[in-house]
Picture (cartoon, rainbow, N blue to C red):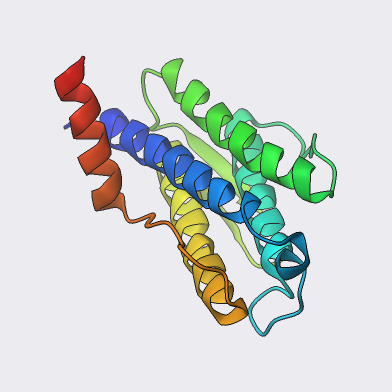
Length: 165
């Protein structure tokens, strides 16, 4: 599988996993989504917002444009934003022939040039890490029936769709 195809698979998985997570969270009490907890961020919504900001940040680095968050901070806006930003990554890759160009990342803690594919891999891994945190927080808060967002379950669903088409 070519490099570009592997990255396309990764961003498609990210969209699939984010949709599953958001659909699960929408079926739970909003009070639990903002309930204080011990984690990297103070609650589930702040953790989702962090994922969203990370995806926006790395997309802006890829596009070599300033960071701009188009969604508000309400629960509905954050849910909408994470799905739409995940779709933006999918669509971005459709227009790419290569992801080998370098992009500069300069933050308080990070300063370096990275291939585009490395930035996308990092961003998708970052999202996966925090989705796992959200599932764990949800269990601690008593949320039931958490979805599996494991990549192998994505492959199973993808393969079923490929067989029917």
